Image (cartoon, rainbow, N blue to C red; front, top):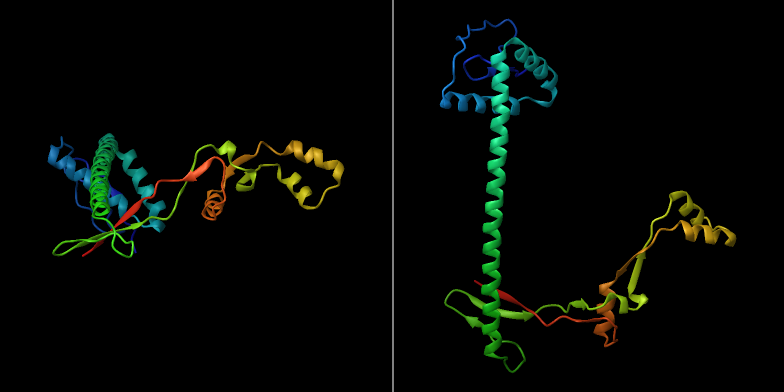
Length: 232
């Protein structure tokens, strides 16, 4: 099977190389490209590159090198193509940012409407079972339920060490020695080798303690929140 290679045609779009032994049609003389023809040329470049299979890369590179060395016009077209790719990447980046802003605007509006609905349903009050009443329409029904409790850390310094974890970094050889139960006289050296630990609070343990009415200094429950349910 012949390799799909790139032939840079002076004055026209690149085309796949002809199989070995096939007659090659004479090329038109080099001339200035119109904007439309230039666009066609650039698109053909991209299509040719994308169609090259993994196993055909070396042959494609050889053909590409031969084309570049053949004439200055072909090098110019490669330069045009690179500039085209840069401009398209910039346009894509701008479009991504525009869509991200649009997505964020939709999400903000969604959050506001949900907050308004939760406020309305809470104002309807609770039924005899202590559940908030539902807000029913012709085709949808809105309801709310209490979100799981969440913890807010007010002052991590005040959180007892029983609720914290320390992450330390040390040289591997020293760690191996520590695992192998070094003598006590090496303890000081190991302690010096350990870098300053990173202290982090285990919020799950703090929450578990607070749910059992155990006070944890420096922490409190967040304000109760509700999530909106929609039945269609």
